[in-house]
Length: 222
Length: 76
Length: 245
Image (cartoon, rainbow over all chains, first blue to last red; front, side):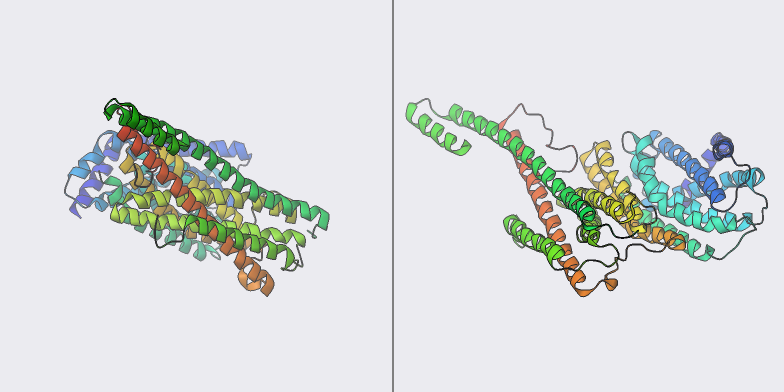
C-alpha cells in the first residue's frame, strides 16, 4: 500500500511539476475538434456523430499520453529501480493505472466543455457523459498500462504499442459509443439503452484490471 | 437477396473450397522448402562429422574406406 | 514424441477420412437451404474453420498460462504454434467468409454481420503477435511477453464478440442463422462432422509444425556441437525450437 502511494505520488508529482504535457494535450484535443469541424463540414453535432468525434479524440489523446508516461519511465531506468525494490510489483501496476486515469480525467475536464461549446446545442447530457467517460478512462488506463509496459521493452515501441492497443480497445470504444450516443441525442439525453452499455464498460474495466493485475509481475521480472 | 441460380452459386461454393485447398497446399509447399533446407543442413553436418571421424582415425586405408562407406549410406 | 498421443501418421490419415467424409456429406447428404440455396454449402467449410481458429487462440492462452507458471519453454513453443495455426485458419475463415458474403448478399464485406466483424478485430489483434516477438531480442523476455500477450488476447476474445454482437443487434437483425438450434438434423450432423474434421486438421498441422521446429532445433544443436566456427545463434529469432536448441 505504501509502495503504491509512493509511486503514484511520484508519477503525479512529475506530471504536475512539468505541466508541459497537459496544456499540449488539451491543445491537441481542441485542434482535433477544429479538424473534425472542417473534415465533417458540420458546426453542430449530435447523437452518434458527436459521440464518435469525442471518443476518437479522447482515444488518440490517450495514446499520446500512454506513450509519454511509459517511455519516459523506461528511459530513465524507472522500471529497473522498481524491480530492485522489495515491493509487490502489482503495486506498480495500480499506481500506473491511477496516474493514467487521473491524467485523462484532467484532460477531459478541459476538453469536454470546449467540445460542448463548439458542437453541442444543449449541455444537459454532459454530466452523465462525464460519468461514462470516467469508465472509459479506467479501461484505457488498465489496458494502456499493460500494453505500454510490453511495448516499452521492445524496439519500435512507438509503433508497436498503438498497434497492439487499438484492437484491444475496440470493445471499449463500441460500448462507449453506445452509451454516449443517446446521451448526446438531438432532443436532449435519453437513458434507454445506456444501462446495457455502461454494464459492458464496467465488465471490460473489470476484466482488464484483473488481467493486468495478474500478469504485471511477469512483465517486470528480469 | 434471392438465392443465386445453381450455375452461378456453384462457382462461389467452388471458389471457397478452392481457397481452402490452395491455402493447405501453400502450407505444404512452405514445409517442403523447410524440409529441403533441413536436408541440406543435415548433409553438411554429416560431412563435418565424417571429417571429424577421419581426423581422429589413425592414417590407414581399410578403416577409412569403411568409414566412408558408412557415411555415404547415411547421407543417401 | 509424446507417447500418449497418436502418431502424426495416424492423425493425418484420420483427418483425411473425417474431413473428406464431411465434404462428401455436405454435398451428397445435407439438404439445400431454403433461403440461400446451394451457396449455403460454404457454411460447412467457413464456420468450422473459424471455430478452430478461435479455439487455437484460446489454446494458446492456456499454454501461455502453463508457460508463465512453469517456465518450461515447451509451452511457449506450443503457444506460438497455436497462434500461428490460428492466424492461418483465420485467414482462411476471412477469405471464405468474404466469398460467402459476396454470394449471399452481393458484397464482399458486410459490417452488419457481427461475427465477421468481431473475427476481423480478433485477427488484427493476433496479427500483432509476430511484430511483438520480433521486436524483443532477449529470448526469455520475448517468450514471457508473448505469453502475457496470449493471455490478454485470450481474455479479450469473448469480450469482443459480446460487444460487437450487442452493437449490431440494435440496428440489424442477425443475418446468418448459424445457431445450432436452428439447423435441421442432417445439416447439424454434417456440420459436426466438418467441425471434427477441421479440429483434426488443426491438431495434425500443429503436430507437423512442432515436429519441424523440434527437428530444426536438433540440427542447430548438432551444428553447434560439430562446427566450432558456427555462431551461437539459434535457428529462429522468434520462439525456441521445441527444447532442442
